[in-house]
Length: 106
Image 1 (cartoon, rainbow, N blue to C red):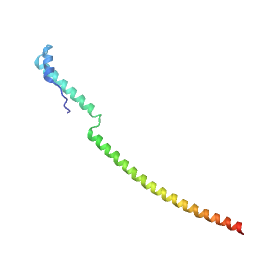
Image 2 (image 1 turned 90 degrees about the vertical axis):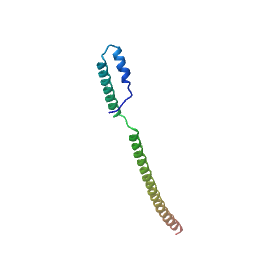
Image 3 (image 1 turned 180 degrees about the vertical axis):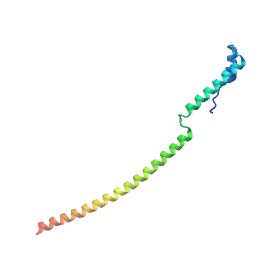
Image 4 (image 1 turned 30 degrees about the vertical axis):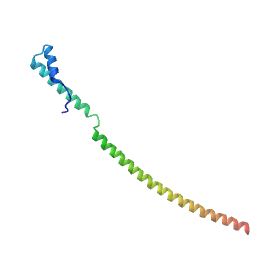
């Protein structure tokens, strides 16, 4: 159970000053501590801890690095494909120009 700072002595004294018996005041303070601790525990389950955040951040960084590597590979593949197309089109263009020149000359 999660402990929260709570001055039980002060609560007991306030309850005794309000007319509660010492046993009643102690019981009330004990119940109040239990309720507050349970509520704090319930609320704490809804929030991420520092270790949770650190682990999630590490996962995100790893995924970013993986995506960066994939992008580099894709970039390299794209460059290779563009070079192949440029060379192919250049050869085709040279052949076409040569054919036109030969046609004009003859």
